[in-house]
Image 1 (cartoon, rainbow, N blue to C red):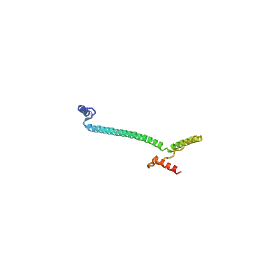
Image 2 (image 1 turned 45 degrees about the vertical axis):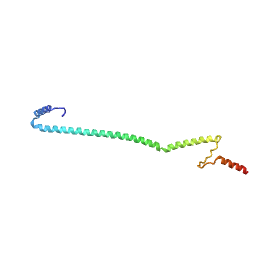
Image 3 (image 1 turned 180 degrees about the horizontal axis):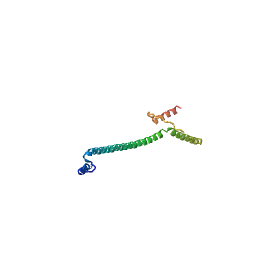
Image 4 (image 1 turned 60 degrees about the vertical axis):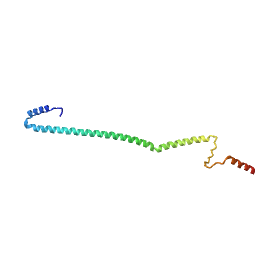
Length: 142
């Protein structure tokens, strides 16, 4: 206890008996015990309050971290859901493109003939010889 050995405690007890006497010694021991008990309780309550404060500090740090995450997420969500601004800029781009296209269409250009769509079938094609024979028959009929 407090780094004191048995002999030191015995020496303090002898000195206390000499100064206080046998009449006052028991009440002094009770008062000393009460004093140490109150000191122990005070130290315990201070320790508990410090632990609570440390816990509160940890909770505050966690809350601030969550708040930062929520702010980042809300900013990202705002960017994604800000459709009006993005659509407005896209419409402006489209309008600018169509204005440029009108200006280009007013200048004369050689237009290419549109490609004719090809019909895709899985039918067998007739051989060219058969077609040539049909052409000869038509010529002969004339």
